[in-house]
Image 1 (cartoon, helix red, strand yellow):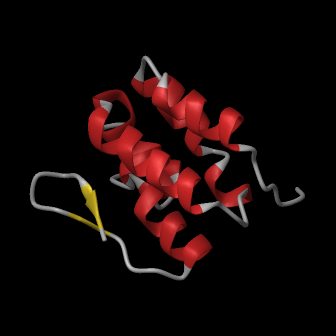
Image 2 (image 1 turned 90 degrees about the vertical axis):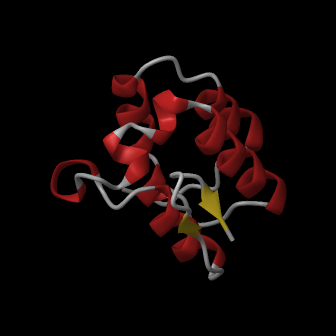
Length: 95
């Protein structure tokens, strides 16, 4: 499948407005397809992850079940931006 550079209004709004773990897992299937994100997109994804428990606790974004749901948002942010991200003890993404 081709790689994508998703516009902020598609990617970040869908994540920010996610209302269920299942939807979070479905949205996370897009993460491996993304090659580029603007700084604004990165910040909005981190904010959505940190503020929306449906995203933060979904397997696809948390990376807690990589065999079935992928490596999670931290992994993909590092891959895309070549910057360091990690999960804090409280489960939030930090730089």
